Length: 333
Image 1 (cartoon, rainbow, N blue to C red):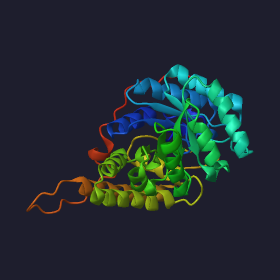
Image 2: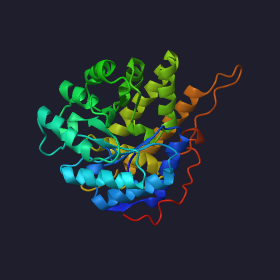
Image 3: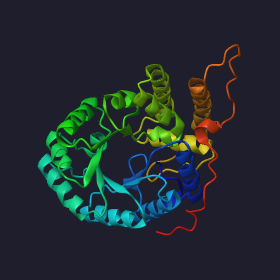
Image 4: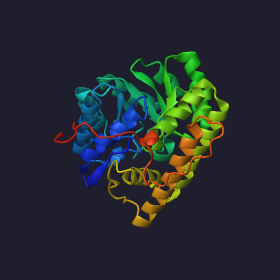
């Protein structure tokens, strides 16, 4: 989940409410706060706590809430995990400390020590492109032997890493949850045995990713091809208007602004899209929303093809009536 912001160190509280309901109504199975797409490491500790309290209160146990607590400081990771547990989070997510990456042996010891301090279970997060650390075979094996570590989100660009984890799961921990973080291979990885995915694009079109996951689980090859193609189109358009490392986040936040869900302010030092880029994103959303409706609509004989939507926001099938529930406003850190 992205973190809706109004300004530096200021949550867009109404936007948080609308976004949570948009995701719930779109069929997601859980929420992951303060990950990469959520700009977690760029936010103040006070704002992170405010977001966790706000979302956990609004979700009110309707879905599991996972909270990213990755930090360069061991103590701050533990402090945030304890806070998250206290306001209702179900689990935390831990990647390698990212400024001075550890060795594989040091990471094994780190995970043992931090899991012993945590009041709730944890998931691993493998994202070597940003952490400069890749969780290799021995780290995965040792983690599978730790009952407090429930699974892994793999956002590496190497599909072989997730395949390795799938093989190790069969041998060491059949109940481990394996989640894919690369949208362009979602259907393939679910077909191989991944339990699901945590795709950033689901902030915008949760029903699209829900449909793709369901089709993959059901072995519906034709539907998978159509829906995976739409996911690829989304990535090739929204994610590539800015080629910097935050281009994906900018595209997602701008799309949500186009849909009147939340503001698109970025955490410092990054900045939102220009108005020209905003208009391009709006046009892409209109096209993708119409294509999704066409992909999931049942065939109707002897009926002409319906016209393409021209509204600047996604249709109800993608967005739902996200009205918010008032749980965030007035929330304190």
